[in-house]
Length: 180
Image 1 (cartoon, rainbow, N blue to C red):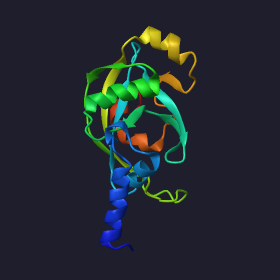
Image 2 (cartoon, rainbow, N blue to C red):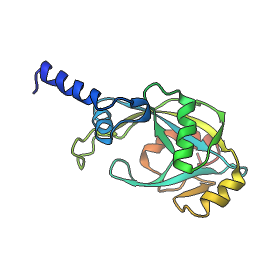
Image 3 (cartoon, rainbow, N blue to C red):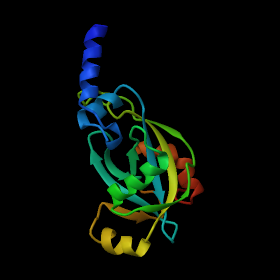
């Protein structure tokens, strides 16, 4: 194990190479931090006029393959509502209106994944969900959904939703998306 001086030198080096953490961190630094402490993120419960929930298809080494609630990790110095809007634009190509939120706070603990170099990477999130609507649902359908098959509206939670989202089963039931 490295001594305190060696660790401090590494920390100083990393901080020098991350001058604008509000804009995000280099992937390697983010993954290192996520292996050490929980990461705060927001989730977007986006409903359409039919009360269907928008989900996105995800396939990665951290959470596996399945339908996912669009979301994004907080940046240093960022307000929660800022992250909601930035996530919507990044993930969906269009902004949202916040209807209500945060509606709860949940721990999402995936636990260790030994297929990763560091098994705890992305293993614990503190998630803060918001209920949203697309700013322009028709434009969203025409400009995004027709072209992007990784986004879809659901009237019921699909069986292949990512397992980490089962922390929301009570909400899914309350919203009429899952039978109780």
